[in-house]
Length: 495
Image (tube, rainbow, N blue to C red; front, side, top):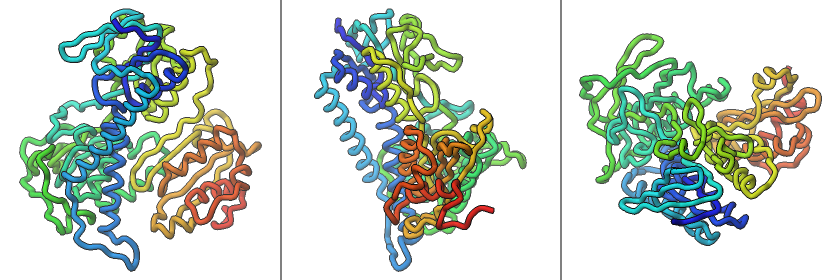
């Protein structure tokens, strides 16, 4: 039997971060995971998707012209080499986590953990079973993709985000069921690599939950990429017979500009083209050609086999572990952090919650998690933090807002990336910044300054009067604050 001060179950961005912090705070920590260090984010989500997003952006940028006066010819995608590079990147990052864990005294144990009592868990790895006794535990097992009735994941034709990121050749015709962040990021990747993409979204707009003016910018960009977006629509079932259409050949006008596909490697590849799915749209029923389908309609908490009842840990109706502001569960000595504890499903939120849990385990007073930003890595990117105008109005706040378009930003013009804007919402009386929304180039990077502004309870004047280097994209945030004050220089004043 192994004993630990703290048992951490799950080695993703909540688990490994919490384990390392606990070890640094003097606790003996055992970290258990049945898969790879880094969890879903590092191995199957955040990092591999961003690697492919960057690759597809480069391919598309070359295809449509790098810059006036600069052209490139003969760009070709070698899918096998691209996937090999991605695997090397992920392997290096996972090994780094292992190095950090070892250097901080965290014992890493491979296997599946199941609680057998409030103070013990069984860890199974193949034929080996070991019991771990603990004083405290941190559960950070994350979530898994949800399948759709009629579209079971088979790893070849019907793909989750995991399998989609391993494709060595873009599908000729790709249907993406689900127009949220994951679905649109994947759809954008393959559209830029040459796939004919159709997005099917049940809600009235893509990126449900975001303000409509932000989603509209992304929607227009998708249309320019040749992506067909069907909102208010439902994918019903695969068709029984395909259309027989063959994939568009390189240079075919039906294929969006970008890299031409190379020969596929021996790894995962979609089924033969020509299959169809049936889609119910506001205009009536229709078929959509799909040589591959990505289903991205949500995620479910990974609690199966954890033995939560034996540990005395309560879950809600959707299976998420119920926690308080210190990430403490119904079993007072057991904590949970990250996606397993409920949305929003964000890696940075998971890590922040794990740090709160570690502090609570070691006796620190509860502290506020702070504003939680969100970023969607479409083209252009979308990032938000804090309240929107409508959310502030719902609680009775009087607000003012400022908006600055990237078309008026010198750096954005020099980059030829002028789609979108920065919008700032503030209290009318105090000018306290309540929320920031960005759709445009590098929105996910720019939002960091806005997060700090909210955390420090900055006013519009604090940002507007802070000198920003020129020419840079964050100047757009500064000028949005100036616009809210009625003093923006590079746009006409609002009437």
